[in-house]
Length: 390
Image 1 (spheres, rainbow, N blue to C red):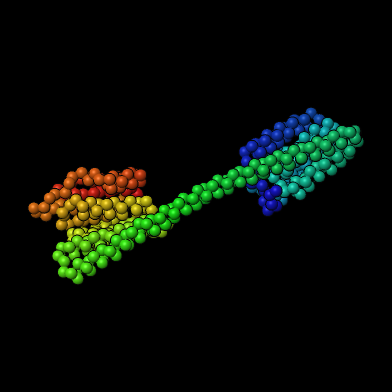
Image 2 (cartoon, helix red, strand yellow):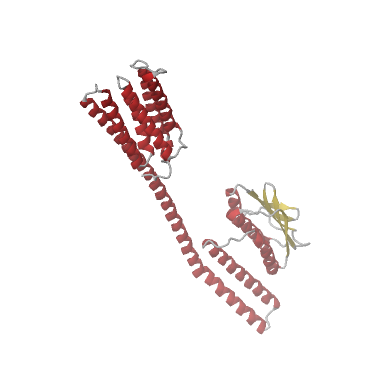
C-alpha cells in the first residue's frame, strides 16, 4: 500500500478518477434535488438553515476531495470526514434520509487515495455517524439501520478491492518494464561477449601472425644489410616492414574497438599522414578548418577509415608526388577531402573511377549516417570526398 507521506499518485489516473467523479456528481445531484422535496427543505432559519448548511458543506467538501488532487493526505482525510458528517446531518434533519447517498463518494475517494488506516477511520466514522443519525430520528426501523451499515461496509470494501487491483496492475507494469530492461541488458551482454570473443580470436591469430611477419622482415633487412644486398632490396624490405607494423597497429586498433576502447578519429589523421609519407616518400599534409566538434563514435570511425582507404588507393594506384587531406567542420556537417596531385611528368596517370570494394564499403558507411561519399578524377589527380551531416 502507498505510504502515508502523500496521496496515492494513481488517484489522478483517468479511469479511477472519472468513475469517482461521475458517481459523486450523480449522488450530489440526487441528494440536492431530493432535499428540496423533503421536510424540512433548505431555508434560512431553524432546521431549514441546518439543511442548507449541511448541503453546502457536503457539496463543497465532496467536490474538493474529488477535484483538488494537490491536497495532502491529512487534508483529504479532513474533507472526507466533513463530507461524511454532513451527509449524516442531512439524514438526521430530513425525514426521507436521502442524505445517505452523500456518504458514498467520500468513502470511495478515501479508500482509493488514503492509506489503509486512514481510509478505515473514514469508514468507521461513516458507519457510526449514519447509525446515530438514523436512530436520532426515532422512526427508522432497526433492520433499515443494519442494512445501511452493510451498505457502508460494502461500498468501502469494493473501493478497497478496486485499489488493490489498481496497485496490482501498476506493479505488474513495473515488473514488465524491469523484465524488458533485463532482456535488453542480457542482449547487450551477449553482444559484448561475442565482440570480446572475436577480439580474442583476432589477437591470437591475426595480431600474432603480423607480429611474426614484422620480426621476420626485420631479420631479412638485417641480413640484406650484412651481406651487402642491393639497396633497392633493403628499401623494399623496409617498406614491407613498415606496412607490417602498420597492419599490426590496425589490428590492435580493431581489437581495441571490439573491446570498447577508444575509436580512431580525426585526431589520428596527422599520424596517418606521417605513416603514409614514410611508406611512400610522397608528401602528405593535413589541413583542418572550422570549429572542431564531436562526430560521435560512428562518425569518427567512418572519417578515419575513409582517409585510410583513400591513402591506400593512392599508394596502390597512383604515382602522385603530393597528397592533401582536408578536414572542414562546416555549419551543417563535416567534409573530408583526400586529393592527390596526379603523377609527375612522364608517369602513368591514376585509374579513373575509384570503384574498389574499399571505397564502396566507405560509401555504404557514409550513407548509413545520412552522408555521402564521392570519388573520381580531378584534373591530373584523383579526389575522394566524404560528407557527414551534423
